[in-house]
Image (cartoon, rainbow, N blue to C red; front, side, top):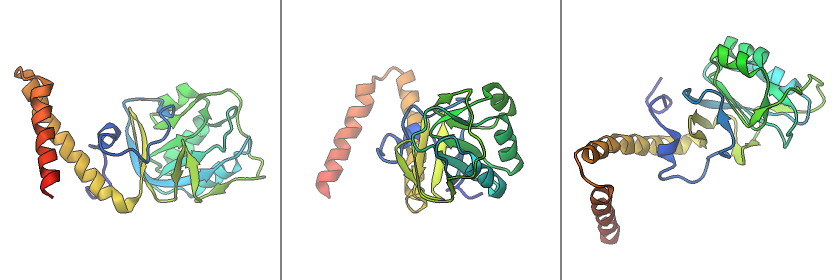
Length: 211
C-alpha cells in the first residue's frame, strides 16, 4: 500500500484545520471510537425498508473498500447488523459508513468491524428487491460521494476526498501533525500558546503579502 492510500496516520480533525468541505454530518459517528478506516468508496443507495441493494454490494465488494450507504432520508429502519458485518469481513471490506441506523450493536462491536452510523434501531430492512443501486453517485451525511472516492473515518467523524486532491491534502495533514509534536514540547517547557501561535501567524501574513 502506497503512502497516499495508507491513511492509518492521518486524522480527520487535522484535515479539518484547513478543509471545510467533504466532512459528513457530525452526527455520523463510529460505534468504536478507537477504530479508523480508510479506502475507496463502494456506494449503495438504499431507500426505505428495501435492503436488497446492500445484499448485492456485499456480494461484489472488493478488499479494502469502504461501503458507504445513502439511506435516502429513512429514519426508522436499521440496514446493518451482525450478518452484514460478517459478510463484509468475509469480502475484506475495510468498514461501513451509513447515513442511518444499525442493529446488533454488541455483535458488531464483538466482530471489531468498523461501522459509522447515526444510531440504532430494532426495525430492520428486508430484501424486497424493489429499489436501490450499487456503485452510483449518492449523498451520505450531506456529502456527495462517488464510487472510488477516498473515505477516511475515525474518532472525530468522516471525510470524503476526491482521489485527485487527496495527495496534497494528506501531505499537508501529515506536516501539521509533525509540527504539533514540537508545539506540545514547547507547551511542556512553559511557553504559552500565544507565544507559539502568534509569531507563526504573523510570519504567514508576511509571506502572503510578499507574494
